[in-house]
Length: 277
Image: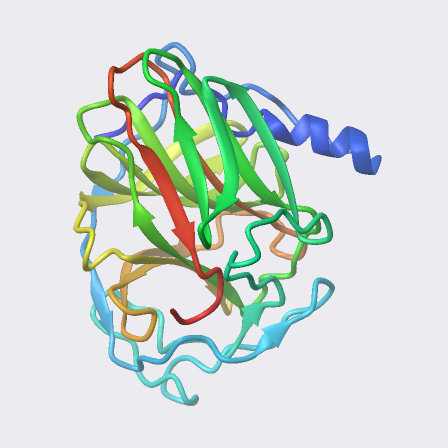
């Protein structure tokens, strides 16, 4: 099972690169445009992270601190889904969004079509206009090192499951390579994106309580896609050897959009990036 958006969620990156002067091959094309081919993965076979505990320390934008998962560390042993306990590291980027203003040192915005994004009432809110198509992205101004580290976010609201609308939490280089957790039409997806090709690593029926927090982390050469009801006890939805060729400098994005007009598409709301509620 997969989904095909007709909106490019990576198209904001060429604008960002033009601002910072990087010489990377940032491609605005999303293969989900016009039925592009995302490969089908397997349904999620989740393992409970009995090690518990939200990540507790920080990594700077230039280096990551080692995680403490598995038998040798404080995180405890991993569950059936694998991957060990919670890492002792989250990236330095943290925000509760309570100031209701965009901090340009942390965040940049990109919007296209009938979607907008703002910090409002303590949340990042992606609003999708009725009867329109479009997308909006709230993304980190700086890249971060996610080696043996991770990032998580609270997801308070997702778009109408009957609309062709999505909400996503993404970490990637921006050059058509990323990993993400996404909601689309009642399903939670774990994706890897390589050279514009979206692959479903795993998917499962979305549960707003059990999947209230989404986390992506890297540990010892493996990437984990995880969910939690409370940001303390984590379930591994998927894991595999790092799909990204480089885990050193990755951007974080909170995004949402719609690829076919709907009368009441709803919105996406995020809170508490790398912070307990």
